[in-house]
Length: 399
Image 1 (cartoon, rainbow, N blue to C red):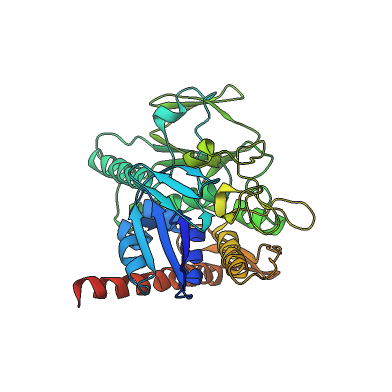
Image 2 (image 1 turned 90 degrees about the vertical axis):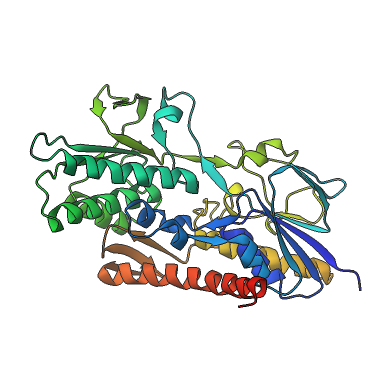
């Protein structure tokens, strides 16, 4: 019987979930492609930066992950440069691969807007692991320098975070919480810390439930984080940030969490895109006018029944993957495709050590119980991937 050649491009939340489902059919030959050899759990980046976890705890090796399946899944560390949809071929920097079915799940990247002077040169994004690692090391060295200078000077550590969305808020809270505990528990003399969130909207966490916004704002205030709403960063230098209101703030380093754009591959593809450059998808998550090709995750935008954008969270990506795999299976078996009814099942916002706020299936939680809920979700996810990767390691090394 002829095998179904399926290529999944992108080893993020959506891509791995799709592979998990499709691998259950032994007639599927699945190839996963990614330029990185690891899956980066971006929902835990705040813990990585604040030294709660090391990089091994927020990554999964894609070689061993794919080896953890039966013989029908393979991973290639190759950068996809284009797709020939007409002839059903994926073009990488070293190969051309044919497919019967295609899943495009390349995600998004930090958008360093060109109209902000010095942004790309002096600010740090955290969506890519290497950028998060660099920032983590810089954060640690900044803390050490304050300790090393104690007794002679005590200059404040100034951290600017541009962007008041989920990433910016979670990172700010975790860094503040970690730093305050670090200084107090180790009895250091110099404890000056200034963390500022620069937010272009009227309030942080645009699009999030008002109750969660208010609780988050209160928590940030308790952590002595300053929020500057209705302002934008217009210029960045090595030691300062200038805002749209004319204010100039001194800074030791800056995280840019003010926007994302599709992965670089999307700009090379001859497919329908919206005004923001994201791939257009239909109700079945197909790429219009392209046979047997689907797009899921952060490189596309989907809408709910009220035509409102569904937030591009890990949960949304996994729901898209579930439906995508089902519709590929339906195509194989000549069944009707299923339209998406994806919606947010909940929001979990980490706000420093031992504290979070959440809304799960309409119920609100805050404090330590919400924190434990978020940790449980993260651990369950990582454990599942680790188990698959461990199985792959045993096959490779015959442990």
